[in-house]
Length: 198
Image (cartoon, rainbow, N blue to C red; front, side, top):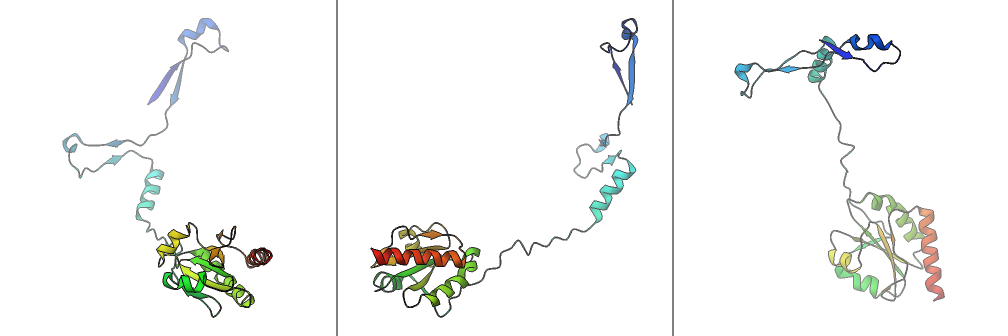
């Protein structure tokens, strides 16, 4: 198929020859699907393609090549957030006696088994609990198993750390998200210093 374009606007040619000038260009091959007229309403119509041999070869190689995808890395592996000897896991029924009636500061960590950042900071929390065991109690509360506490203390992100003293949340002690061990120590040191001064 050829395309004929009339070029009356070209300035490089003489004006007297412009009205008779044409340009003939071949069009590139375009894939066309044709359906036989007798089977136009059938759902099992075979289509014939007028594609180039290279395109047909590429298409057939894609159709016959088995595709194996490994989705195992995209699926999170759930592990239980375990507590060592230094960190105690408590629930709603133990919260009042363990946290609110405690005679020393209590750092509460709200966690969940499906929370990656919670598992990430778990070793740091264990280390911190052992290092500060003479000045601070560290407890964990499972987010999913204790919905009343989650609602009462408005825990929106995990992990969430809240320091309690004398049955009250220490102002500006709330921290959400993963934290490095160094930053965790700085955070706790600053909190303990602020509540010892007040």
